[in-house]
Length: 311
Image 1 (cartoon, rainbow, N blue to C red):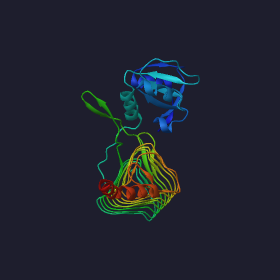
Image 2 (cartoon, one colour; image 1 turned 135 degrees about the vertical axis):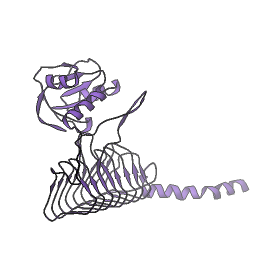
Image 3 (cartoon, rainbow, N blue to C red; image 1 turned 180 degrees about the vertical axis):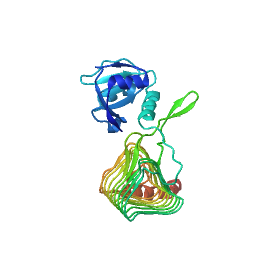
Image 4 (cartoon, helix red, strand yellow; image 1 turned 135 degrees about the horizontal axis):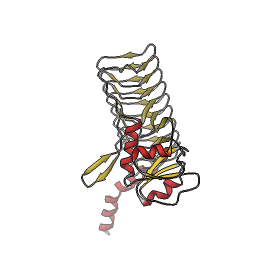
């Protein structure tokens, strides 16, 4: 998430009322999660296990809960609770905006686009040309939809990321300030849910088609011309490259990559990154030929046991 304008380190420290290490005028351009940070971004870290990863990342400002040596060319924001203060910054730069109308006045809708009754289109939404948005679709703030997109009834674009920190009193939500971006010629079935990024974009690539009841988690990037069948659940921060096929009831863990033109058969649990150009099946995931051989061998076990008992 980039800020509308550059801010100084001193200005950011004042917003969250914390100490800092670095020059007062050190430039701060935005804030992001560690997998998408760029120079000028703030990244937060609150566990020693991840200090080095954050300090050595592309981010040039680290919101951290301990005074440590500051790497050259970077700055630190010292907070007793970086998770809380990251949320403060999100609320400051991307506050929730309510609206009392079905289609927000700030929404931009392209020529030839049809929006059926009972839809909600939020603040600053952009919808391209010649789209069809069927009834009871909810499109949250800041969503971007390209041209020639079809979205079927009951789908929700832009709900919050499923991202929580466990506290003694319960779960504390990391506030989502990102977007959903739907590129041209995408088809989205009925009752799909696509969560917005925490700070970046959840993206559905050009020409990709989603069946009914597909869930896409926060900050996931799906490539071009993919096919995703019903009841598939894709976790957050997944990269699905171009022309991938996921058949029904596939589930994935977070933070993995599925390579170009991979085919994942139904009811597979994708527990790790997988190469493109191959077919996969089973949980834990394996190449489908190998998995099917294993299942065939398992079926022979009773006969093998019977033969051994007769000896």
